[in-house]
Image (cartoon, rainbow, N blue to C red; front, side, top):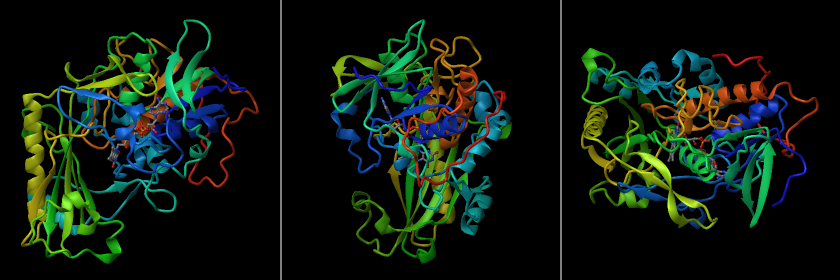
Length: 475
Ligand SMILES: Cc1cc2nc3c(=O)[nH]c(=O)nc-3n(C[C@H](O)[C@H](O)[C@H](O)COP(=O)(O)OP(=O)(O)OC[C@H]3O[C@@H](n4cnc5c(N)ncnc54)[C@H](O)[C@@H]3O)c2cc1C
């Protein structure tokens, strides 16, 4: 076991958006931070599916799990859609606080992600009016140069210790906690006063379980989004050449189960996203192969997608395979899936809403293709909830993401969500990560003068902002 020469105050595991933000803000507060990332600095291709070090099992249904092991994490794959969870998500999902508590953190996370809203396309606005549903401009994350946000420009990205796979945590009753890491065939051990896990909901649960932490709710409570997509193909709608990079897009927030008039026979709700027209060439070859031979090559397409809320259920959880190991010797994570009749009704509603939206925006001669169906090989898309927060002492984490059975550990990713919400999650992940930073900072007390990051200097890093420490967590 190699030991590091200098002990960090905080080890952060995972350099996705949550780990990058937590690292940047802890460093701005004078903390010495070691950011561990399993993958390389730059994401190159989707090889994770076949990597023997990242095998997993799905039980109770067929599924696949899109991941990106590299600095930026799944922001290397994402669409950059940003939306805050509405007040009903916090209320119904058993969150320990409401939307108002998270509002200042949301605002901070939006600024960090360069959130900007495009003007609302009149075609989409008209369609929403005719259907009687709410609509908003798309809010999107962008890098400082206006490009797609992948995290590469973040101040903390350059300092991440890449190729470092956290294998387990040592959590002694007395003395410092430590992270055991595999890197280049060697095993390293990093002690720290605080450990922040930002490896994403399934990996974080796997790490905690592999560390021998016994808590009956760790790994349980897995929730995700049902995700479905339609493609509207329009032979008569040209693509505006000026809008090729940023096509018109809009967001339909949840409009069901918002009072007696919109009551549905399931819990929670769903949102709808519209983006297009885009040139057919932007679609993968195998998707284009699904089109009719009569589709002209200069036809355009518009995506109509929906994300629906999946609830925690006894049959949905993460645990470790009893015997099967991956190439690093780790027990495989097992993802147990289940669905209910009520969830099937939710998905039927999501499909109907997507079809209605598509019909309302379609031009003559258009055709509609169902592209992604949550009951036909769905992805494990936005896993959450495997180490949920709550004021209830039985909840694994407190409302600041601090792990009750191991108080030197904080959970900064969606594992800590009590529910999955009805729209894209990353803004909420980051708002939560900012709360984790406040809590860690308060627990560590006054920083030693002159302490800086363990990371090499991040010259040329753009888009980072430093924030003055606040004396106390806010709520
Ligand atoms: C195809 C796709 C599209 C998406 N589009 C959107 C969108 O438009 N809007 C939105 O809000 N969200 C979207 N998401 C979800 C979004 O990507 C995630 O919410 C976000 O990336 C979560 O950030 P994170 O830092 O918590 O986790 P991740 O981004 O998953 O990062 C976790 C990091 O931890 C590292 N790691 C894992 N295990 C270990 C270990 N043992 N040791 C060291 N490092 C480890 C990983 O390599 C990774 O870099 C999308 C997701 C996918 C898959």
